[in-house]
Image (cartoon, rainbow, N blue to C red; front, side):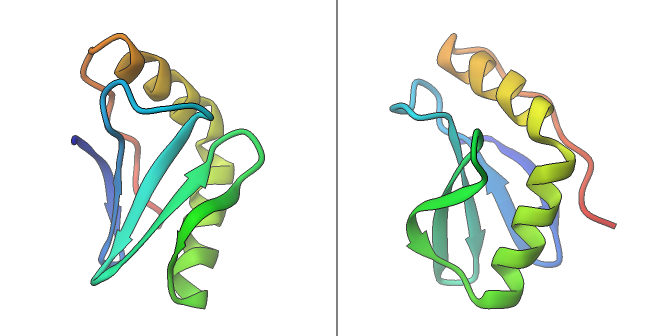
Length: 86
């Protein structure tokens, strides 16, 4: 599973050929959440409040890039790196 961004100790990853809806995995320590790209909501899992706020802020800024990466992964292609939250 490629890491496509990393900020404040949070890893953003995508699986190849993952199931719908389009989403990414946000990992922070022992926490993990699946985030829906289309509506920027938590599909499954959990992150601490501040971490989820950072992830959702970042995802809003990079929503189209995330959708593009989702399509690449669905076609077994390597996703692009996305700038971290600064």
